Image (cartoon, rainbow, N blue to C red; front, side, top):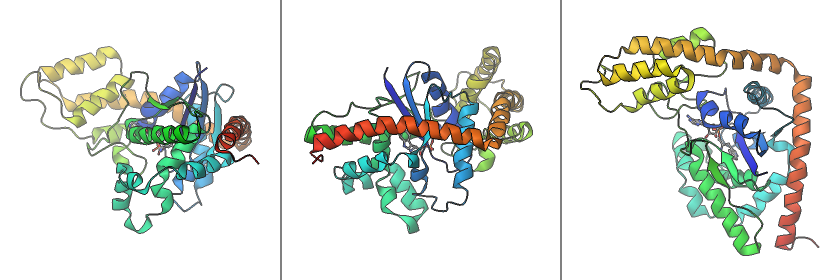
Length: 329
Ligand code: TYM
């Protein structure tokens, strides 16, 4: 079975971008692949050094993944800091990652711009830790959203350099989505991607109530509508149609598509329908996640079981890595 790995940072509430970019694929892949899914708590420290809410965030991410259908008996579900082998591999990979290439990464440049007072070395080497996460299980498929594509390319570079220097140890990992193109869900205000901590009224969280979801959709960015038949949709309208194609009946989506193409679309009606369908979609995930979060004994058990499975695989890789490098005296 091919090995699959992916991770989510516990930096806030999970949203539809996380779901459609990543988690939906996890659930499908656990049937046919050897899967490792983890909560990237070390990664979150690069931008969120305050650890007071970390425990509850980690629990929530795990509960939300379980609520979406992840099965701990099929996939290993673990927390990054429970697998110290990742830190060892990170150290080795840091020796083949160069300052110049790390400084050029767009996500690094964004973070520097947003928070110039905390440009720490962990932030700079974020892609190296991410490569270690993937390579520690010698994973080949990595289900992620489009925003992670560049990080995946870097992971491949580091793996290639390692193999070149010390011998073939790592297979090349690749970003994965079932429909080939990686997903990018935009924020409902039309300004960039949907994200955990940006405009909360333009982000649909998996924990939102029905009323809040409908309210957020009502406020979603639209315009006067198309002025000529068959006109191309602006990004924010395209995004609403993408969301509709994910949660609404095909007949409903087709009707609004037709209305759009005939310049007869009424965005108020479209958003109302989408709000109802979205609420119906999110409700069972939200309710299930809440119930799981109450059961900390169950969460503990899953984290321990997942960590044991992950460490078994990780220590196998570290042994091979050390032998390849000659660190086995
Ligand atoms: P994170 O926590 O920001 O997001 C988790 C997953 O959700 C996807 N995603 C989106 N997809 C589509 N549209 C959006 N608006 C959207 N927002 C988020 C992300 O692409 C991601 O798949 N660096 C990673 C965590 C990580 C990781 C790894 C992932 C650490 N190590 C190893 C894969 C492999 C991150 O910050 O994801």
